[in-house]
Image (cartoon, rainbow over all chains, first blue to last red; front, side):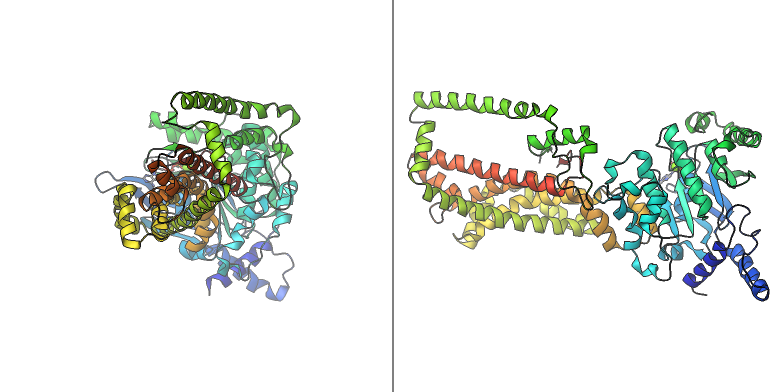
Amino acid sequence: MPAQQQHDQQRLAHEAMPLDEGGPTRAPLAGAGAGSQAATEAAVQAAARTGGVRISNVSKSFGTDESRTLVLDGIDLSVGMGEFVSVIGPSGCGKSTLLKVIAGLTDADGGEVTVDGNPVSAATKNKMIGLVPQSPALMPWRTVLDNVTLPMSVNRGANGGRSMRDPVELLESFGLGHAIDKYPAQLSGGMQQRVAIARAFVFDPSVLLMDEPFSALDEMNRDQQRMGLLDFWQSNRKAVIFITHSVPEAIMLSDRIVVMAAHPGRIAEIIDVDLPRPRSVDDYATDEFRDLEGIVRAKLRAVMEPGAADAAAGGTGETR
Amino acid sequence: MTEVRVRGAQLTATEATATVGTASAVPSGRRKPRHPGRHVPASRRWYKWRIWLPPAVTFVIVAVVWQLLALANPYVIPTIDAIVASLLRDPQMYWVNMLVTLQEVVIGATAGILVGFLIAVVMAEFEIMERAVMPLFVVIMVTPIVAIAPALVVAFGFGMMPKYIVTALVVFFPMLVNSLAGLRDVDQRTLDVMRTLHASRWEIFRDLRFPGSMPFVFAGLRVALPLAIVGAAVAEFVAAGQQAGLGSLVTIAAAQANLPVTWASIVLLCVLGVLIVSFLALVRNRVLWWSDGETVAR
Ligand SMILES: Nc1ncnc2c1ncn2[C@@H]1O[C@H](COP(=O)(O)OP(=O)(O)O)[C@@H](O)[C@H]1O
Ligand SMILES: [Mg+2]
């Protein structure tokens, strides 16, 4: 099957999913006729097998032969369609490197990454990956609207058969309707980061990769942006891999939290977040949230214990 | 070349300061704001004479000292009134010569700017080209232009061509170096976003490298354009008397010990320089309104 066609088919299956509960495999199919049900179910299962991001046995090292350091060591991770997965771990454990491998910006030394069944090179060619870097990375000479439409104006060959979002509508739903004609320098840091997120959503990619998108914001702003992203994502489910330093942030947003350990970078544990969706600020105060926070923090402490220096430099972000 | 900090005209720097304080006053049209940061609120108007008064005082002092020195040494420098009288006696002659020099600067500098920028683009896209040809350009750069000029006159005759070439040569190197720095100085994270979208090399150039290089290009122009006047004048010195131009005028008048004409021509060369630099600042404000204006030329 051609990559684009397969991509679209999976997108269809994905869109049939209810918004409020369950992962892609558990989702009952709304409106599927009895006759076609079996066929559609098979398609969904096929999509579930290859859909989303599959990372298997990925390793990466930097440096020349004598002073080679292993940064990623046998990473295995699958992120299903419509699933939100956070990655948390000490500084320098290879989170950004992992994201760059998935985004096709760095080649892994070994292992395999697929996005909706396509190797990364094909996935970038088909514009299936949306990247939100650590800083907004907007073009200061373009208006907010022109920044958001950037993904449509490059690699136009991959635009065919794709359901682009209306950028103005999208910006409005991000609370940026009044800022469409403004320039990035006229916006606050939080608003700039929202523009960067809109730019990643606008071309309807299969997966969104976010590298500490809120880390440069102050705590108040940060919480506001986080809840904004949560609200938007809960009604526009995408596979998301989200790097963060904040434990509450990881819990509030994610279906699963990947805790990484350093030297070499590896997955120490994957913690399920079974808080019901849709979530809201009220969830911060629940016992379940507090329990999860305790579990994640304990795991992070365990991961950081052997190397005291790492723990000092790492800093798991905020304390609530 | 020594590092020169480029801030544009004094007025520009202060306008930029005013922008920070009045971000909300910036109009938000559908396209780019017409004059972002041009709006100076009434409470800040007093700034204006803080801008103009100090240099004005300096100029007055220099003029007074000049006049006193000229009165004391009549055979070394002319008095200011003698210079002005000379300018008024034959404005047509000065105007014609100024236009010739301006023509050399405009044509020569345009050629130098375009060639410098285009070669910078090639070098930025193909790193091997930089390694291959940059040493050659450095050799050309360190060769004194006053030594090249007579050789070019021999080669190309006494017409305008050697003047264009000398002017272009002087402009070329600062343009090349600054454009190259600008084209290389892309925001890595924006580049990551574009690469993840599989943007083509051309798209990355068109949407990111080219507009992003403009602060450096203008920093380069700020160095190169005054140099263009030097280049044009030097070329005229070499072939003095064969062709018009303010540089020729200086040489001929100095040889005849005609102090007022010599200095009137020098003053006009200064005026030409100020006009060109002001024009550049004007264009920079239009094109580069989004930049903070702190790019350092190399
Ligand atoms: N391009 C590179 N060359 C050499 N070392 C690198 C490079 N990129 C990252 N590293 C190293 O890999 C390790 C992991 O980096 P990174 O993925 O940025 O960590 P994190 O995002 O988890 O803080 C660090 O020790 C860093 O120094
Ligand atoms: Mg990082």
